[in-house]
Image (tube, rainbow, N blue to C red):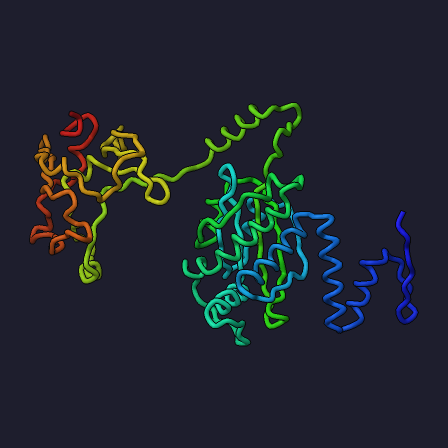
Length: 389
C-alpha cells in the first residue's frame, strides 16, 4: 500500500496520493509556468505507465499538432461515449469538416474538425502563426480536407503506436484518412456499423488564442476469437452478412447523359424535346452510388406498367457516355405497329462535352405534334416491337 500524505492549503485539508495530487494542487493555486510544466511532465509519465485510448488520443493529438504544424495545442479533457448510429449523427454539429477514416477489414470511422481548429491549421501552413481575428463563415472544400489530412493521419498513427500492446488495439488501430464527405445525410450512408466509440476533445489553441473541438468516432467491433452466447465466429459472420444483404440500396436507371450550353439550358420550356441517342430505350444503365455501373437494361411494359429488363448484369461494363464503337455500324431498329415512332439515330457520343455538335432544341410544330406517336415507349414493350426480338 502506497504512503499517503496530507497537504493543507489555507485551512483546507486534502488526502491524496503524493505525486499527482500535490502537482494538481500547485497547478490549481499558482500561475507559475514552471510549475505547470512540471505537473504536465509528471502526468505524461504516469500516462505512459498506464496507457489507455483516452490518454493515447490526447498525447497523439498534442504531439502531431506540434511536430507537423508547430502549433501549440492542448487537449482540455476528453469525453468518451458509446452511441448508436442515429446518436452519432445527432452529435455531429453543423459547420464542421467531416472526414471519413478507412480502417481494417472495411471498417469506416469519422473525424470532425470545427472551424476554429481548421482555421488554425490553415494559418500555420500559410502565414506561420495563428491570427487573432474573428472567424468568418464559408463553405468547406476539398482543399480544406487536404490541408487537415496530415493532422488526421498523424493522430491516428501515433494513437496506434501507443496502443499496439493494449487490449483495445483491435478497434483503435489501423485507421487512416479516407475522404471528405459533404453532409450528415451522406455521412449516415457511409457509416455502416450499428454502434460507435465517440471521443470529443475540447482544444486550447495557441495558448488560449482560440478554442476548438475535434471529434473522433470509431466503429465498435467484436474482439478477435470472442464468442457471444455460444455463437461461433462462423455464425456471427452469417448474421452480419444477413444484415448487410437486408440493407437498402438505391439504383438509378439512366437513359443517357447530355451536355447543353448554358444558353440552351436557360431557354428550356415545357414542351421542348431533347435529342436522345437511338438506343436510349434499349441500353439503359443501372447505376449505384457514385455512378458505379452494375448492369444495363431495356425499357418496356409489364401488365401496363413501366419496367426494366436486365440485359447484362456485369459490373465491368463501360460507364454511360463512353464511346461504343460497335454501335456506330449498327443500323437503327425500326418500330412495328401503328403506334410506333422512329427515333433518329445519333452517334453514340454525339453529346459528350468534347464532341457535341451545335444543335437547337426541338419544339412542337403548328399542330402541337413532334411527329411521333403519343406513346414513344409502346414499341419497346417486352412482348411487342423490336425489343421483343
